Length: 152
Image (cartoon, rainbow, N blue to C red):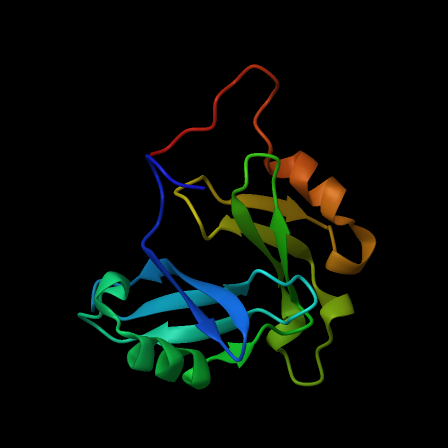
């Protein structure tokens, strides 16, 4: 997915697999959150902290690999889905999953955030990742037929 509304990204090869890191968010301090997405859907995606002032486009191969190494796999409370337009969404459980002893099944809803483009966040109260298929999640983020997605 490219064009208007695309988030900063950088692609590369690590351990024989093709990866793209997306800048999903930046705080006012400049610190950010990035997600590594593998072209192989059988390989676990990763999340990583982005230091203030780091531009993904400026990473050389060594820095790209170091950022990937510093990342961690997504947790069972997160899942990647790709919509029909190629936009990559991260579905995250919301709720008491952070409480001591909490489990993904304790979630009280889902938050879907597009990490490849600027799209509105979608919240699904009462939904759980274990109950919803990728197709059901995609149906919730897809614009109505005949309406082009916004690019903020």
